[in-house]
Image (tube, rainbow, N blue to C red; front, side):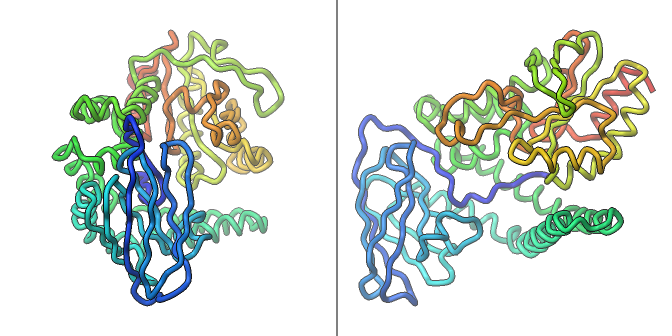
Length: 399
């Protein structure tokens, strides 16, 4: 399933030489008193949360920002720190802006005085018919997924869990056409407005799932000034990460302690084809694809194929080990990716994180490495599909 991130609370920045002031005034229909909260990043690094008291449904925020920034407005402080709350996502810019909101329908807020928000409104208008069809399916999928997680915690039997996975798969398949339509709308928007902050904001989330050539072309269409901005620098970082994990690049050689406490190095597999499977115990599509991986391993192991599973379960190694056992995939090697959330939150480099070295941002993603240590295939996020993977394995290892 294509991954799609709702653009709710993330923030990308254009670094101006000096922060400039902004004033945001607005009204909230249905909320004459109380407080309204604004979350934004004044300097591109740290988030700031401001609050002001509503007076007859009116409010005014003032502050300084380095350039256009996506902000979040809410009538509930807690909603700004959680997913799925009643939030208005609007582009702040230096200058004076006005916003109109309605309690219970903040997502439908409108703003004047922000060119970036004008562009974002055009995009949202184009998306609206697709979102109308996608939202009920997405809601159903999320509920089923939560039920599946609870069933696993309750240690339900394998037949029950398998049935729940089948139901999730059915809903996912129904969602797929909507994701494809959304992707087409977004790509068209980005191509037609390469100098728009809204395009850069959107591209930041789309680019890691694009094939390398398409990602590079999208970046190259941006004006030089945008490429040199923090917008452009973030996007270039994503392109460089994608390139490091795409065909034609030398595979990053990692060393880790495996699931059995033994030392494992990619270097030890030189001379064989290696399929690296980036997955997680909580990833439904990953788990659903394990039977097929087992078939491939059985078919090609004697012809020179090795599989290394790299799990995004650093915070829950017990669940990782249980999933390996339940799915019967202990027949190949397994390590954790090396995610360190404290370093990530502090924006510190973490060379131990294997996923970063391969530009992995969505699961499942598989990387195929040849006997010389060169990447010859990427399947999943930013790559081809599993059918292409099967064809490539048959090509290099024989039917």
